[in-house]
Amino acid sequence: MLSAVFLAAFDFNVVTVAIPSIQRGLATTFSEIQLIVAGYALSFAVLLITGGRLGDLYGRRRLFVIGMTGFTIASALCGFARVPAELVGARVLQGAFAAVMVPQALSFIQVTFTHKEQSVAYAIYGMTIGAGMISGQVLGGLLVSADVLGLAWRPVFLINLPIGVLAIALTGWLVPESRAPAGLRLDVGGVVLVSAALLLLLYPLIGGEEAGWPTWTRLSLAGSALVMHLFLQYERWKTERDGSPLLVLSLFRHRSFVVGITIAVAFFSGLASFLLLLTEYLQTGLERTPRAAGLTFVPFAIGFLSASLASARLAPRLGRSILQLGAALMVIGLLALVAVVDRRADAGAYILPLFIYGLGQGNLQSPLVNFILADVPPTDAGSASGVVTTVQQLSFALGVAVIGGVFAASLGPHAAAARYGEAFVHALAWNIGLLAVTFIASFALPRRQRVLRVA
Image (cartoon, rainbow, N blue to C red):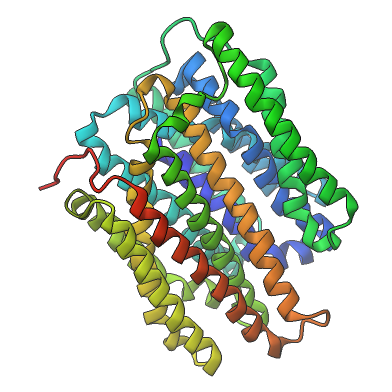
């Protein structure tokens, strides 16, 4: 089930490393590159809540298989695309099928394991998201530089095929089917309204900065707020009428859910922009190859994976303090990185700051989902999972738009290589501010999780 989470995170990040190679191979314009990156994120985020609810209604295993099958086929279409339009269309399909398969993994954890077992499962879930994001940078750089069989950038998509086929083959053997109790129906009106609201929100966030924030972007954002208000009113009416809303509004009565979602917005907004802008700084500002840029992330990966594995043991003992420890370590890592960038130090100087940052991320990200979903009943697993993963994707887009805008403004219109370090430091300052929000908000969470003390 976690293969869906890994592939979705991997494909969100791997394209950033492959962009120069794609531009050369397909002769793409910058606007087409934007669509290749944004089309995936847009369709993924818009359909996540719907994908989670479909799993509740028609079976989580069934929707996982449908989503993984479609994602694997879409990956093949990406890998064999001959013109930019084909790659854009295949990326949109990838995102749509990712939205079908990813929420089923969180729902599966909730309905399959007891509260005592869930701490380990959630820790591995959080680790998988991070591992997918980091692998997108590291493995993507290696694949592009290796030019496997002369295919240039295409292996970054084709590598999904064996993983997808294996996951589909094993699902029937290993994964039990589950669904919500009989009586629920698909909320078509809710699907239309929430999809429209998210589309109106995400499209200007993803493309507004490059377009210079024209009038249509502001109108779209205002329209998103209006349509989201209509969606919430409709869901309230739907709950009273037949008890089958797309979004279960009672989720927001749980303090841990609301506070956890707030922390997730701050955390994931900073994380997505950090990974993207560090790659941009290394490849463009320092003119490193994709392989060298990817290998720079290895200390980060080691720190993250080590802390993620340890967090399953530490979280039950430390409670919410583990989130605070993670945020503090990430801030220390970023402050050290600022010093390295200011000195334009060599590659070895990045090892310790990125390792510390990775340790912090592992201690924060892996236990966070457990805090968010601790009080959610299993019958609402799909709706809650869709909300969590939608918030994650929204935060990615928001972080890239806002902090990416800070980076671009600091860089100036001519984008001189000498200014990349200064622009990156300004972006890091915003990341530090978001981590401060994460640290402070964590005090509103319950002190302890309902989890097993792992031996």
